[in-house]
Amino acid sequence: MTEEKLTEQRDGQNVIALRQDGKRRWAIASAWMGEKSTRFLYGEYADKLAEYEAIGTPEECRAAVEKQKADKELESHDEKHILKSCLGLMQEMVNDFAEWYRWQHGEDSIEELDDEEIFCIRKTYIRIVQELFLLHTNHSGGTSTREKCEQLGVDWGEEISFDWSEEE
Image 1 (cartoon, rainbow, N blue to C red):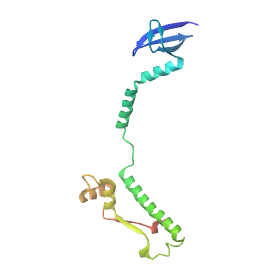
Image 2 (image 1 turned 135 degrees about the horizontal axis):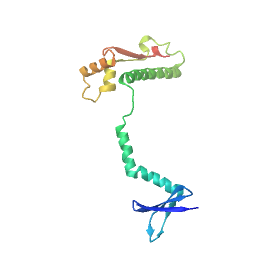
Image 3 (image 1 turned 180 degrees about the vertical axis):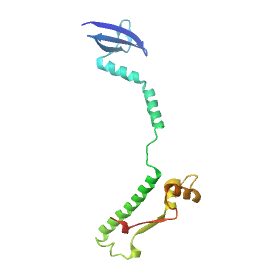
Image 4 (image 1 turned 90 degrees about the vertical axis):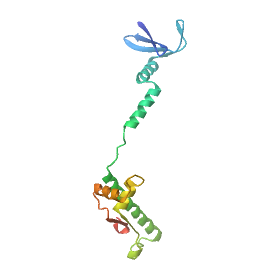
């Protein structure tokens, strides 16, 4: 078995690359006193340290991760899909309320109500679009909201009813 010592200075530490039976092994000395070291890392531990050092310092790694986060915009749906999903969620909530009402008042309780007593919420597209996309912006006025409705392909004056009649 032959060993060949290759010593080099790296970041204030002496690094000894040992070749043993043709394989390169690392020994990293943390401090040297004359010809003797105070501590060594051998084999896979030294290899792992060398890999981490090749990547960079912890500060450099953190900076790279933060840069990736800043550069990467989270993928999202387009506004038309968001509007459609929100309308679906609103109807789902009304349906859940109907289910709760039946649980509280009996299975046929909704069918026994008069038309005036049936739960219903009405919203115009202009109100929904304004609240979803433009509220607290510089474009939350009527003209901008009507323009946004046009971009989304909906009639700003149309009223949508969320009621128990659409329950599945």
